[in-house]
Structure formats: structure tokens, C-alpha cells
Length: 116
Image (cartoon, rainbow, N blue to C red; front, side):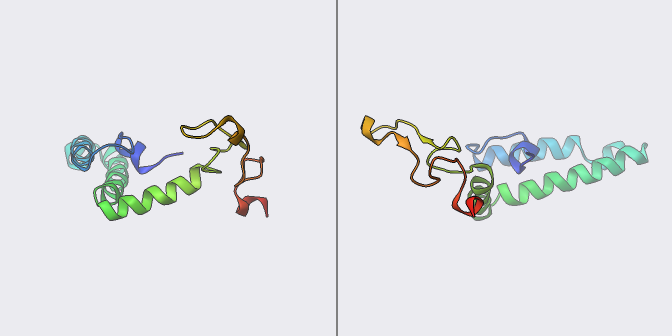
């Protein structure tokens, strides 16, 4: 799945400053004006630059990035407590009795919405 993070080559834990540095580096490398002699390549780079600009517009803004991360978590994780396995993992602070079927997805690894 292509995300804004993969478009800029950064991770979700990357700082805003490093996101900006990655965007500037990629935008300079993929700018169509640098390849004006080849119109076909310039057209491809225009769409790539638009993708990079869209990614930076979201990841460079703290509020937009937070909203994007929440939506991304909902679309990539089928069930947050068990991470899609249907079985709860042993976590710090939980006794061994707490292990077992995930109460959120009922052991199927899907969200409530997907089970309907």
C-alpha cells in the first residue's frame, strides 16, 4: 500500500524537520524544469512532483498528519488490540490469564464493521 510516508521515504516517527528535508530533496530531484529537454519525462515528473507536494502538505502539518495517521491506522490495522491475528498478545502488565481470544474482534481478526 502506497502511503504519504512511502512517497517521501520516511517513517511515521520521522520529525517534521526531517519530513521537510526529505520533501525538498525529492522535489529538487524530480522537478520537471530540471528535465525540460525531454517533454515525456517532464510530464511524468510533474505528476510525481504533485504526489510529493500532496504528501508534504499532509505530513508537514501537525494537525493534518495526526488526522492522516488516525485514518491510516483504521485502514491498515484490521483490529488494533490483536493486530489482526484474533489472539491477544502478552503485553507488559497483563497476566497470562489475559491471553486468549481478542474481545474486540472475537478471534476472527476483523473489525466489527467487517463482520457485519
